[in-house]
Every structure is written in structure tokens, then in C-alpha cells.
Length: 459
Image 1: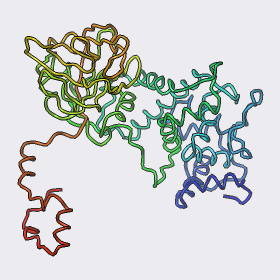
Image 2: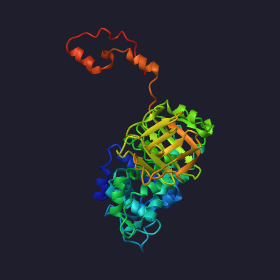
Image 3: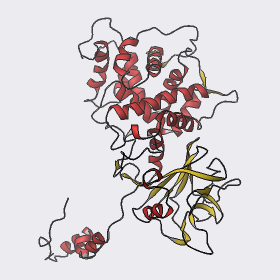
Image 4: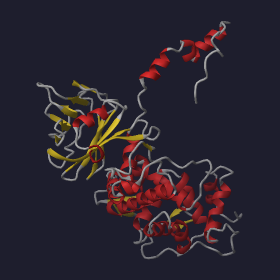
């Protein structure tokens, strides 16, 4: 880059490692040369058409125009978008300094530096005023989430998920955007200025993550020191040829971070009314093996909700589970309701009892569960007046007493060890299992006679 560039731009470049700076420097040349990476021609600048050519495969035209509007508004002297030019449209070209400032703030910036970018992108096409409405931010966030979904699909990062056999992502995009924007704290006049957005970005890390993906993937930067973020858990052992799942990609992006081991442990379909029929016994069999599970229920009013169970369910007339359990809703709103500490009524599963409720429950108390599915399987309830005592959740279903439309059970944790595995572990000497004991024996001069005589463990 030339010596005439501002000190602010040079400072922005120091956020990147030495080996990354040529990559950032080359983005401008790649855009102006149509992807060929040729050296910069004198007086060349990025146009909207050039940006559309680069980003159009993974983002909507609306979002490309938002990004271009933001790039044009950046004042290299301020190293930020210039506000208050509501009657003066930005120049329809982008120079190298503007691009570097945008990339540095989008990829490595603080909440304070990212807030002006989001404010201007939310305003498109109405200028560069100093504040926006919550509705404008929500529309921008919808475009941003849609781009992330397209990136996951187009870049082959679905890890076993099959979008064409899942629910409509456009619905999930709107609901996830509403969930993220519910954290906004606008002024009394209902507007959001830079300080409001800064606070929101700080408390809602997904916004920064999605913005980074937009800049990195949309412009095909691929910094070697920054591996692609993992937004979806792996999916395994799922009969997609028989299934049309209640899940969609944005709902997965919402639920996976809430679940322990949500990104590392594979999600495995254990039960579906569509695949296995409406059988409480069959569903119960799937719950009592396989480890932690996530229940997803759709009622006949269209509400979709469920619960996470932190370990394998046991069939017994007592409450079970621990404070890692939670309830959630994913339509018409996305919310998670964690343990309040009021009681320990986390999970309940019972059948064929004369004096105790027969069915599956989470939270609350007998006959008044936060989530209840009766053992006859067609009926359930979600009672909360005003909140479930165990999870603090409101009524999750459309009606307090609901009729089941469909249901899925997903195993979402590491599978429990088989009896054979536990038996094999029991045969191992403590000297073989505990490396600290081995080290202590060696320090005291003791010989480990069994070392080298054991069969090597399989990788």
C-alpha cells in the first residue's frame, strides 16, 4: 500500500498478522479486476456492480447494497462512517482506504467500531442519519442471517443436515432476527443511535460473528489464522429420506449454543412421529437410552417448543435431572428458559401407575407442568400462571391444553458408554488409567512391569 495512506488506515492494518496483511491488501485489487487479482490500475475504484459480482452468490442484492452504502459513507479522515449527510448521497465508488477500514472493523473491530457500520447498513437507502428505528435494525439483521444461511449451504458446511428436508428457513430467519433484536434498548423516542447499537453488539455476540462471516465469506478473504466458525452441530444417523424435520437452519443456529457439547457431539434423530408413528411407548424407548436429548413439539395451533434433558431419562415416579435442563420455544418466538433454582422438578417420566401422573413432564409440578405430554400421546399441557416455577417459562403452547401435531426427539450429547466399554475399563489397572500415578511411580524408582505388555488402544 502507498505511503500516502492515512495513519488511521495503517493502524487498522496492524490488527492483522503480517502474513494476513497481503490478503487484506489484495481484496481491493481482486474486486476491481473482477476476481483476477491483477495489480491496481491508477484511479480505479470499487463500484456496486463489482461488489455484486463478488458477494451476489451468498447474499441478497439488498444486503450487497447495504454493504456498498456503508463503504461509500466511510470517511478515511474519521476512519468511520460520516453521519448527518441526509441530503448528500455518498459517492458511488469505494477507494482502497474505505475498504480497509471496513474490513478491519468488521473482522477485528470492537463493538464501538462495529456499531457505526451496522447503523449505516440498517439505514439503507435513506442516507446517513445519526439514529435508526428498531424495525430498520431488524430488517438488516434478517438480511444478515439469510446471508449466513446461504454461506453455510453454498460453502458445504451443513455437516450432515439436509435443508430441503427441513422446515422453511425464511420463517426461522425472521424469528431469529426478532430474538436478537429483542435485546435492543432504544431511546424513549424509539430510536437507536450508535451508543445503543454498541451496547447491543456487546451483549449479543452473534451479531459480530455473523458480520465477520459476511465480510470474510462474501469477499472470499479466508484468513488462515481464522478458521470458519462452526454454527451447526454435526448430524448423524438420521433417515432424511423419510423425514421432514421441524427444525430449520436458523433454529439450529439458535439451539446449538444452548446445549452442552452443542457443536462437538453429533445430533441423532431418535424419534419422530412422522417416521415412527404416534406411540408413547416407542418415544419412551428412545428417551431411556442415548444420553442427553432435545424434545421438539409442534401443536395444532402451530406453536413449536420443547425441552432439553441433560441426561438419559429414567422411567420412575420421581423427578430427575439437573439445572442444565431447560425449556424453549422456537415459534412464534425464540426463547430459552433456564432453571430458576426454585425447585428441582427438571424431568419426569412415568407410565402404568395408578396413583401418579403417567406421561412426560418438565418443570412445575404434578398436573401443572411447564411442559407435559400425556401417555396417551395425543394431548399435553403447558401451564404457567404467570410463570413455570422451575424454569420461569410462560405458556409455550398455543392453548394451555394442547393437541399434538408432531414431535421429534434428538439425541444431542455424547452417547453413553456401552456395558462392554464399561467392563473393559474396569479391567484396566489404576496405573494404566491414571497418568499421575504412573509419574509418581517413576519418580520413586518403581518399575512399571505391565508397560509395553498391554495391547495398544485403538485410535
